[in-house]
Length: 230
Image (cartoon, rainbow, N blue to C red; front, top):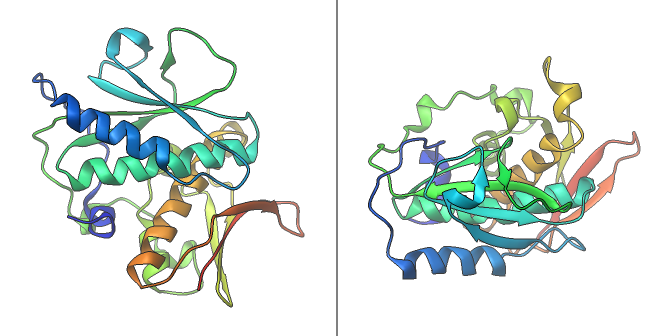
């Protein structure tokens, strides 16, 4: 299964098998995450950790992301680790984001982690995804918007709006719901990075070549991610 197909079936997996993965499989996932293109100007350090090294999760494996503690850094962590998330589920493995877990050895630049491992949970049907209607996040119905709609987010709030212009996709921060004030500073920005990866995968599936994503504030002062393509 390719990454674009994985967008339709990925879901948060919470039941992991006890048997360990082949070390070569684990290493390939770690290396893929470490090679992933970050948000421009915000490199992400990815570290593999077991359950004994993490608090707040008992999953067998974790990818920990460390980067600058600002909006662009948070978004970059989401953009990088979502490539691993889709790759894991394309390979039939399970994964899920955990916003409240972290390494036992504290570091000020820790941002977020992705738990993963073997699972017997079946893939989720796209129709079963609990998401906002497409017209709540985009004025256009196209493959990019449909892929972004399926992106996971903190408390499933989908805090973004999509804008399309000539050879450019922009994801603009749009706080939603009662938790918006709590999530807006960090988790919403991670979620925007995750959604931007879905947009990039969809663009590439359509035959486009995507430039490295950049982050900037809009004229209204909202954080946004731009993906240029040709």
